[in-house]
Image (cartoon, rainbow, N blue to C red; front, side, top):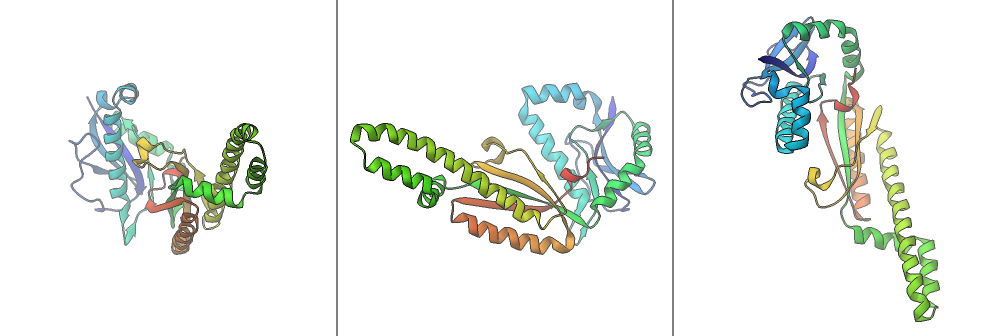
Length: 269
């Protein structure tokens, strides 16, 4: 039995969809369903393959399947948003949003129409940009902190004046002190970066820190943020991000920013 997989909603943009685009299952093609002054970007899928229970089972037993479908979902949303010089305001749907038929989809759109319009108005003329910060060189970071942290300096001085036997135990304590101070300083740096860039945005969301298996990087992620920025402030935001990246590299960090993205973090309705 077939159903409709919903990728996103947007304002009417007749004829504007890169074609042909394969859907989330790699078979059916993506197409547009008009509804009043909106468009639903959909493709036909087998209901049994994308039922909620089946997706939950796949999430437990076949992460490769989930990742491939999630990438396909994001690709369609990105295509539907367009690109330079045309970026369309749209509401991306959560992975696995599916309807039994067109009538059921239109019923939901009618019921939620005003809320959908409110969300589209809220993001009009704005872009989502993401910022991810990684601790690229931990040893450099530790060295910088040790050199400027008075608590660590005092402990090191105390250890230098102690007999060898006592110094051993103090060194173990020092390791704990260093670890605590590094954690504090790391939080201070990360929070400072978040707040500094937040000044350029009208909204911001701290997202979950991703593990190495998802980032594909060896360096640990320490900050993952999304910002909603007015279009006229994008250049200022980019300049600020570039400057901050140059500054924090001296402490062993690396800042990565990217966009514009569909407003995943700011379009719940």
